[in-house]
Length: 287
Image (tube, rainbow, N blue to C red; front, side, top):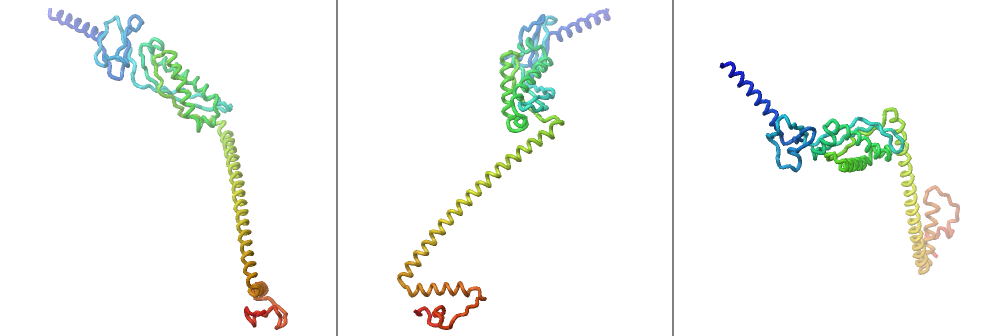
């Protein structure tokens, strides 16, 4: 009798445990769920905008099932793709996309599970990469315009996600790496180096031309100022000579002495009473 009672209690206890496992489930704050009945979503739990929150939840046992999705941001790293840029150069591109499930009902009805969602998003990401990068030069993709191109790709995917009503919010898109295939790197880098050298030569030539223009302008200005100074000196000499002819004769003789004997090795054959040396013996008053 006791054995039968224990067996009955064990059966009842096992049945209650099975019933509880089919009725109750727990969601933490990072999770959301859809309740499915006969293949259709009947309600969502702890989704963004709902007030039910996380914790212990209940559903109809054996009739309803639940499927849990992550509420946090998800990152999908796309498979490495080889893309032809606008200048017909091949590039190997690594990119990733960050998204989150905003509407679990639409997400489940449109995609079913995370694996299908990742496949669909990767296809759209690769298509958006080819569309945006296919119109840009490889130099822009590798360096200067990559950020702007990523914004174009992200905006494109955001519009697609909204229009297709997948229940997904696109947060960001990033290109981790955009490099030339190993077979093309040497030729492309050589072409880029040649282009930079040509640009440097052009800038250097413009600088040299500017330098010549500045020197020519400065030289012309210096000659003009020197000419004005010489003219002013001549005017002052003429004015002074006109006032004192004796000083003028004395000054010209001093200049002649300086020109003929300044080096110290000049030889002059002149009569001692020559007018050339008249200022030596009689000073500035000689006539």
